[in-house]
Length: 264
Image 1 (cartoon, rainbow, N blue to C red):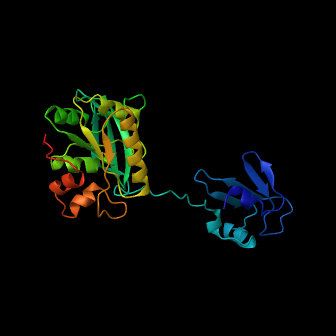
Image 2 (spheres, rainbow, N blue to C red):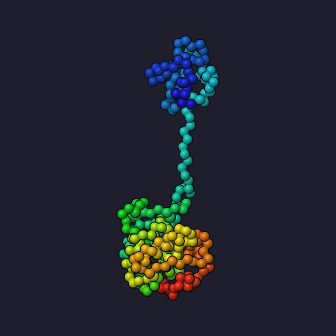
Image 3 (cartoon, rainbow, N blue to C red):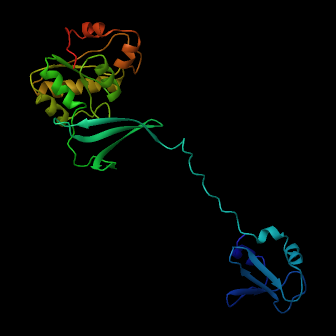
């Protein structure tokens, strides 16, 4: 217990400098002979100047010697290294000249955070004031310059990278569905040539809304754009899931109504 709780149990308590005096409950104490103070380690120090043992004083109060000890301090356990968020992937967003503007960082347990470089390996975990661009913009520019007639727009960098690995130029925006905006549209409008944009939404309500929003913004910018819903997708499925079902690039091109798409 603490000192205040202990003093409440004693009769005739009065202050005596930094200590307290009270009548000892272990004998007929007419002249307060019990001295009480707090020790430097938080213990309650008790002494009867009439000679009563501390155990007798505590027994008379219905307490034990353990009650003179401070309450244990509970320290919250620090999360283990395994429980702390770990970086499992980084996705670079670069401008037309290849300059790194920011990264989308995937953490495990699964979450995403944005950061921008400050030089010499230093990162700031926000993108305040940084220009937004579509994912893999320099690659898109090169693909269009080398004759690619169409670019896919998907939800998430993982899906975009999956399409690039099979020779299909693709892009996306940070923060997922519903976050495509004027900066991404403007960057695509400035691409050399006039590629067509094929939007592959995820198979859920958010994906459907996202596809419609991106299509509207691109068409408003006088860009060719259309939404293609992939057949046979499971609920919340994406193009990576579709290809993972054993589908081929040729099938994807047919579904999207495209001819041969040049590799990078």
